[in-house]
Length: 416
Ligand code: SF4
Image (cartoon, rainbow, N blue to C red):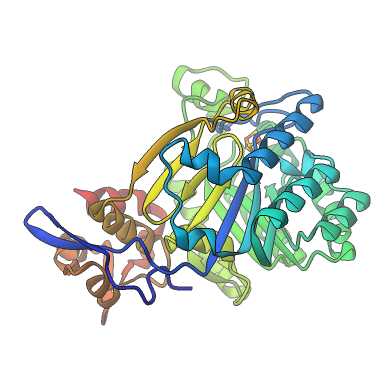
């Protein structure tokens, strides 16, 4: 669905001497739901996410809280300043994404309760229901229960097929777990499987990277996500990179240039293997693109439930508090602990369009932007055309193919 397909603009606002149309009350027909499960078995050395390693006794109270948030979301929103547009309350949920963390750790009965709550509260026509899973958490009993609950897509945290890399990154699984899990999922009837790989893990070389891609292709997932290792100083690996030490193999982290080469090799390799590169970090067998994640990049609405979950209504963005214990306590008091609540201004909407549009390999349609926002944005790209960072093809502007691996630098330039 096009996010602004048929609505008239609802407001005109002068910004910086120009008039931008703010289109937010568009007729919404479909809605995405995200549920955050912020628990892991251990903390990977590079991870800076707000996830915790907690006793499994904490899972059930957390799910109770998420079920309560789903069931009471309208009244909870009303007491926090979130303005749920009428068009969203009538929308049909077509995608659900259970992410984390490691939501595959949950007892399938917990997941079933989430789906029961969603189906009770929303109109649903679930086309894509994704569960993030780590390979070592998968067994035939769980996979069968996931299928019964309606899950039809597993996003699989493979990260590497090298046991040395997995071990140094603090991952719980090994290469053999991936080979064990994939047939279990297929035999259980999960039709869609996505693999995540990370370019830049400690100890990774060009040879081990190419070997991981060969093994990925042999297992033939229908979707692939590739991330460049981002080392944050809040992670153990990041701290070692900054301050020294040899516990987390920081000295063997590939250089930025090596990571860029790995990414560019993956682009060529996956293209040759029949995958379509549709977003900077994502490839799919044509027709198997992630419908849910496309909503983020296309600025379509989604509601997030759980600690740290983000939501976007078109008119506002908001995020729940990250701390799972604080979230559970607040929901028990019928309070929604929101950390951020921002209106989507006309200017921020346009900036998001440009930034998210460039992330997609289909690029930005200048005609559509002009029709929807009432501004001409081509002049904003002049410096980037001259620097060879973006390219224009008729009314479409895209990142230059050779600059995909340095997209963050291009986005910084665009926003100057
Ligand atoms: S599994 Fe994912 S969320 Fe959990 S610690 Fe590892 S990187 Fe972080």
